[in-house]
Length: 64
Image (cartoon, rainbow, N blue to C red; front, top):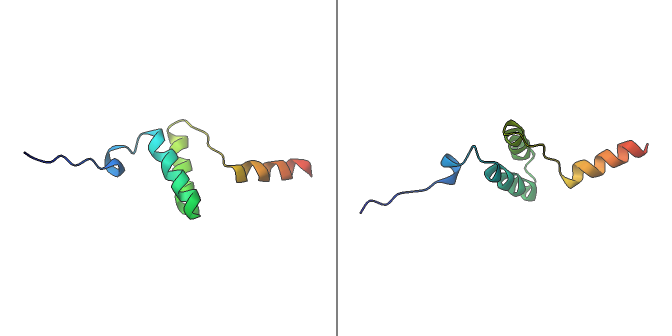
């Protein structure tokens, strides 16, 4: 019997949950380049994504 490999990095790149998970992992690792890529891919798929840091920064700017 032939084993079928399932590689989510190849097959799920057009799924929002894939990119949301990629963004979470990038946030945890502090990898700004991957955060930006995940955000861009989510926007391409029709999602607008912000982080708690983005919201905090926006509140500080609005308070001035």
